[in-house]
Length: 559
Image 1 (cartoon, rainbow, N blue to C red):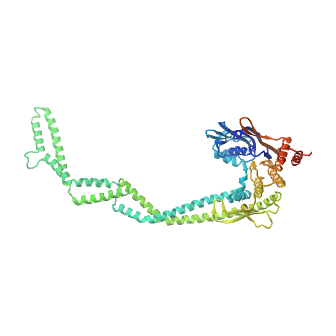
Image 2 (cartoon, rainbow, N blue to C red; image 1 turned 90 degrees about the horizontal axis):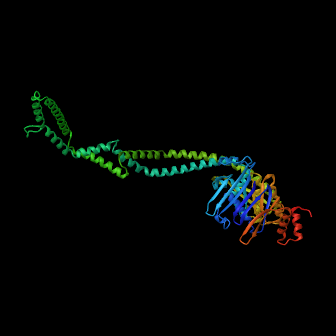
């Protein structure tokens, strides 16, 4: 429950610090006194969007802080999941700070948190029911949520959600597979043509380099052959020369050997020249062999150039750089064609999987529907029981559950609240036939029913009494007071004295004007102050004895 609330420099509030209590409390005050400001500050604590315009004029920072007692509300898991500490006394301090520069910070037990974490926690701490929330009563999503809360179907709905997610994922895969198959079959012939062009070249790794070298050799065969013969003849000579390089080396070797007795170094020189002679003979032989092997083959040259031309054409066509990339491209084509060829089988598998999942989903949806039907019966009984003292004795209320045409994320049920305030009127959609006052009372009855089923520490009603008065207002107050029993905290912002008088604690919001500004304040009233406040609500600014007596009567105080 909300124990304390501290606000500084927010809107018209300079600074306030109030203590709140368990049970049923009421907040009253003139229109414009600051009740909506109070709710706005609490909304910031619950993770609502911050606006720098909310900072009190002339100030640079506003602070809103609240202390909650969470004992018995099962919040340990939330704190553990978000790496937050929850003290042994189960106290939780939430603080929100907003600066004029637009910076917003949020803290839970002094640990900085993202606003979405604050919002998640806030959803489990306080339910603020304002007048505009009455419009939710006509929305199917809200109606379904009410039925699920009363049906206590969390486990079955979680199982359904898992199956639904699997069903939708399989459905998505099937759709994509069918689209891919359609595109694939349209493109398969062209892909096969592309692959056949590549396979016709019968490429192997390294063939491009090999053929490029062959093209280089065959294209210059005559030039190469002539150069080889020229080099060989320079060594061996030909018929036009009287002597050759080899013969000259032989002659030099013999000449040196003849003087080796006179010059010992001549023998070593002769041996070196003899080595050159042997090497030149070997070179000359190799030159002759290479020249004989070098053939001028125009047909082979044409064949190599044709192959390379086809290769270069394919590389350019597919924006590739070499044969390695072309071979990889061919492998990819084969893989795609294999996938296309097997697509029908894959689609059949997905269709079977989808059908099996849908069967499971339908079975689980039926379990969920059964629980909702039981919950709907309880809602119908309890709402009618609660509407009688709220001034609609002839009300009829029904929860219509009809099967949906297709599985939805929430199940296979369409929910509609049907209502009639009179015996002889046909049941119709509640949003279409209920008046504002009737909707307010139905919503209060629903909130009372829900509050008994969920562990929500604090409920705040913001002028839920709109459109009612007299004994109906007293009945609404009785309902809210009953909701506050058992340790729950219920706070009602009201303009009706009948409701204000039944609060176990009473707070008054008021404004004060000074020479420089206007500020809002809130005080918890003493008994005498409550008598005067209720009397003012009955008679206006002028207190008359009759109003005082009426106020005491409403408060249950004897004269």
